[in-house]
Structure formats: structure tokens, C-alpha cells
Image 1 (cartoon, rainbow, N blue to C red):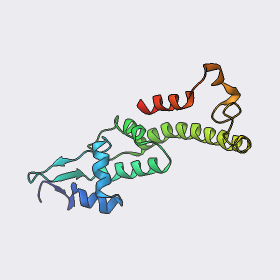
Image 2 (image 1 turned 180 degrees about the horizontal axis):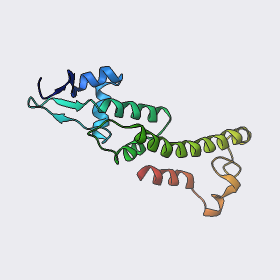
Image 3 (image 1 turned 45 degrees about the horizontal axis):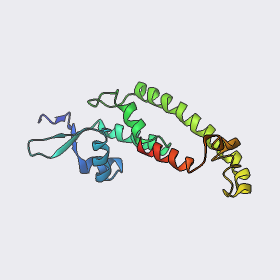
Image 4 (image 1 turned 120 degrees about the vertical axis):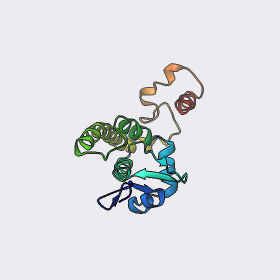
Amino acid sequence: MDKNTHEGIRRELSVGEIARRSGVAVSTLHFYETKGLIESFRNRGNQRRYPRSVLRRVAVIKVAQKTGIPLAEIRDALSVLPHDRPLTAHDWRMLSETWKHKLDERIASLTALRDHLTDCIGCGCLSMTDCPLRNPRDVLGESGHGPLILEEEADKGAS
């Protein structure tokens, strides 16, 4: 039996095999790797190989993405877990508990947005002094004149 098999099961897989088995495009796997979500190594022929454990990691990434967790948060959460073994039930409980709190916050924010949406239709975004979503209680009016919302969004985009 060669060193890459254990009881007839290969321990390393090509990027194509990972893509086929996970349902994720090769380009996505390469993207995940550049973002530090998964790791590969090169064999003697300089071909990219992944440990079998990456299949479970990719599944966790896809589930987290489906719930709306940004890739940066997924990477941060996965960074504390070793890459050389499959994620365990304990690992999943830890990850899901962290993400559960973020999802609860997002749900509360979306509920508030939904509840104020009807009020927003009345303003038509023509009066930024009376918009419950963009400028509640005209807090921007207290900051002075000019494109304050645009400057604030540009600052967020730069960070």
C-alpha cells in the first residue's frame, strides 16, 4: 500500500476531486485558498493536493455562506482550528454558537429595517431630514451641511 492510502482510502485529493465531491468550482477552491480558508500542498509533480479533511471544511464554509456569514468572519473562525484534521462535532458547536449570535443580530437589524420600510415609502428619499432609515431624527443635520452620508459610506468602504 502506498504512503498516500490508508486501508484503501486515499488521504490526499486533487483540486478536481475536491470540486467534484464538494460541488464547488475549482476556481472557488482556489479563491478559498487565497483567502486562507483552506490549505493545500504540492506533491513531487508540483500538483496541488488537499487532505481529505478539506471536504468537511468546504462544507462548513458553504453552510456559513448560505446563512450570510461573510468570508472574512468564516476565515477568522476557522483560523483557530487545525487544518490537518477534519472538523469535529465540538468544532461545529463552537463555530455555530459564534455565528448564531451574529445571525440573531442580523435578524434584529433586518426586522427593524422591515418595520420602518413603510415609513420610508412616505418620504420617498426626497427629504433626508425625515428618513427613518438613512437619517433618523435628523442626526445628520446636527453634524453640518454637505454630503455627510456619502462621506461616511466612503470611510467605511476604505476600511
